[in-house]
Length: 204
Image (cartoon, rainbow, N blue to C red; front, side, top):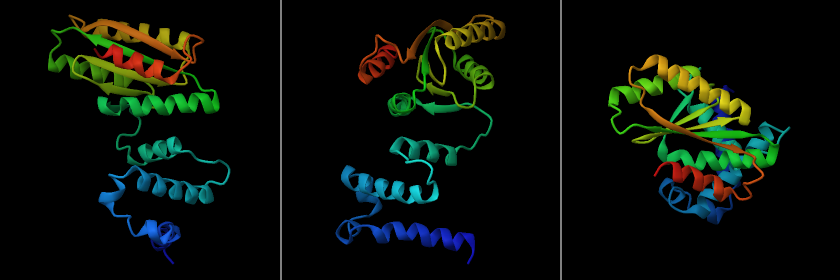
C-alpha cells in the first residue's frame, strides 16, 4: 500500500469515527459556518494527531501552528500576515506563554502620514530580512505590528535599536514616527484582554 493511499485511508477514518448523526451534517459549508460542528471536527483531528505524536497532547493552538507551518511558502523568512489575523495570533502566544512559560513581545511601529507605498514596502523588506523566522509581521495602513516569540524586555530593546539603526541607514527621510512595545508576562498585566486592548489601541 502506498503512503498516499494509507494517508487517505487514515484521514477517512476520522470521519468514520464521528457520531453518525453529526457526520451527516459535516458539509464544508456547515462546518465553516457552525462553530459546534467546526469544534467537533477539530477535536476529532486532534485525537487522531495524538496517535501520530504520542509524546504530547496537542491543543487547538498547536494545530493552528502546524497548519501555518504546512502552508508556509517562503522558507527562511519572517511571516508577513494580514492585520485581520492579529488577534488570533496574539491569543495563541498568550496560551503558549501560560502553558509553557514562554515570554513574548509586541512592537507597534507607527509611520508618518507622508509614508509612500514604496517606502512602506521597503520598510517591510528591511524588517523581513533582519527579523527571525519565528517572528510575525502584521500590516495595517499606517502601522506595522510585530509579534516576537521568546523575547524578553532586554531583547526587545535591542531589537528596537536595531530596527531604528537599519531604518536610519536605509532611508533619507525615515518613515517611522514611534515604536511602542509590550512584553509578556508582566506583573502589571493580569488579564489577556489587556494585551489585546493594547494592540488595538496602537492601531488607532
